[in-house]
Image (cartoon, rainbow, N blue to C red; front, top):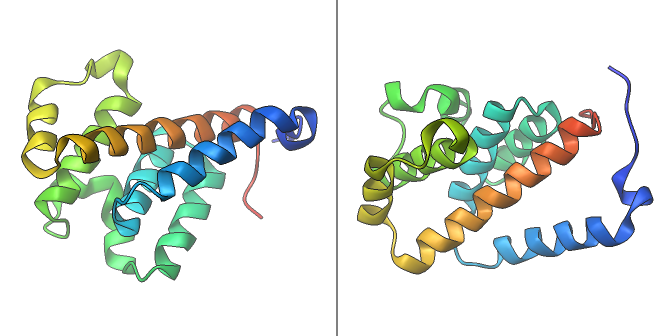
Amino acid sequence: MDKRIDPYTSSKEAMEAMLSLEKSVSRLGLEPSLLELVKLRASQINGCAYCVDLHTREAREAGETERRLYAVSVWRETPFFTDRERAALAWTEALTLIAATHAPDADYAALAAHFNKKEMTDLTLAIVAINGWNRIAVGFRKMPT
């Protein structure tokens, strides 16, 4: 697959905005381990090889286990995730696939059972951000290095 344009050089302003969003997400107070699981799951759904590679590495560096990383794509069928993580992963899937799911009430209820209102908003913003990054990386064919 041929690499396309480099968005960092073609529109520095646009990429600065994305980087600012990413920095904001990292400062919102959600657990870094939870954020990495969310980023990994959205990236798997979106078929973003670059982001799957990146967030798998970053999760490992933050202490995530291989077993849990391998199981993210099948999280519903494993006992390896907490109820809070399961709610976040379900919400991630619902928002990443929003055209098909329309953010189901059951996923929202699970989210509300494990996150306060601020955390729900912060998690949603984190999901928005990773979906944006996935679209940039897939659209411009950014490859793992």
